[in-house]
Image (cartoon, rainbow, N blue to C red; front, side):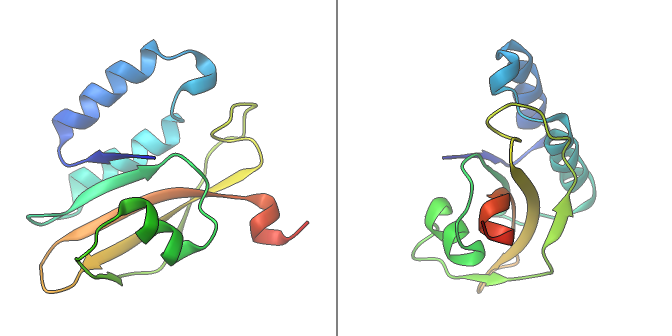
Length: 127
């Protein structure tokens, strides 16, 4: 499951709705701030968007492609994976997880997908 954001107005709506969730289910503020920074600075292109993947990803590229279900479009790894520092709380979105952002280019188009996702600490560093 993921949240797809195309515009600043969608982010404003997400921030408003996020306040209504119980603390356990709120998106971390750091994630919302990163989405805002992307929308302000980066050019998404005609079919581009920011995707916040809520469930942890098992395998970086394959896991992201499976969740986004962008077939038949082909995605190309565009830039390096960057760390998204998120304060760990006892919520299901942060406990035992590290967050990352990957930039994917849609082949044949001038569009970008910015995927913000988490991986469990066990998956990254082993048990």
